[in-house]
Image 1 (cartoon, one colour):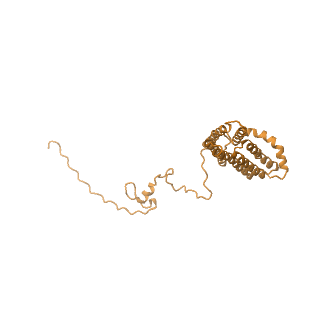
Image 2 (tube, one colour):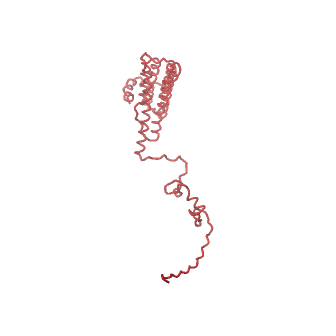
Image 3 (tube, rainbow, N blue to C red):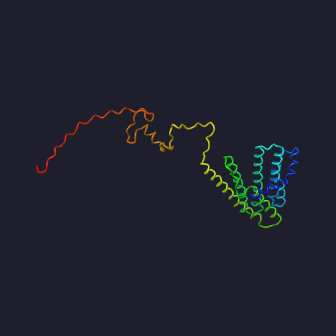
Amino acid sequence: MLASKARPQIQKVLDPLSQWAARSSVSPDMVTVIGTIGVAGGALGFFTRGVFFVGTLVITLFVFSDLMDGVIARARGISSKWGAFLDSTSDRVGDGAIFGSLVIWYAGDGDSLPLAGAALLCLVAGSVTSYVKARAEGLGFSCDVGFAERGERLLILLVAAGLYGLGVPYLLPAALWFLVGATLLTVSQRVVHVHRQFVRSGRPTLAPPAGSPAPDPAVEQPGSPGGDPSGAASVMSAGGGMDGAPTPAGVGGAQQPAVPAQQPQPPVPAVPRIAPGH
């Protein structure tokens, strides 16, 4: 949320450079790709060796391209779904490189398996956070909630890594553990938010795939309302009723043999009653 509110102010600073790039022949897709390569290269080239201050400067420089490519595309009137897709995919690559570099550092020369695990949790939970939002919006739900979105997570990590590189102790480890909790909280908030929308909307079901045959409403399926959940009706139709007697012909689609009529029994003569005392 904090980074989202600060984005317009940052955008004003970058507008002159973005407008210049828009008048040039620079492609917004090229700006996105160059920024992603710069972020990944800075993380893998510096963070994996424990050079955090210089690495933070390099990563921050290329992170701003994430704001410039959109301005260039809008200024030229060439904003497209492809550009949005490429930008989102590039963000995932950059985030993976940053947190993956911290995993490599702490699992190696950093000599801290707990912090390597914390960086790995940040990487996985961050990917799940982005996936939850993308999947929810793909299903028609809104998902613009969360305590720590991508901007906040990146800002906290880069500030902590830069100061840690200048000699401030314990700041980067504390930031990693904080991001673990903040990212898991964000995932939970988004899942709950989408579920509430689902309940309010009347629990709609997914449409059947295109080309799949529609179920015949005249045929009762086992387990359907009004039908026999165990399929016993089909067995009874083919083999007889509940007491073992065959069902009439034509019931259940099977021709049954005729049952001979029973002959009437002769009446039993009444026994005369004898009065008491005789």
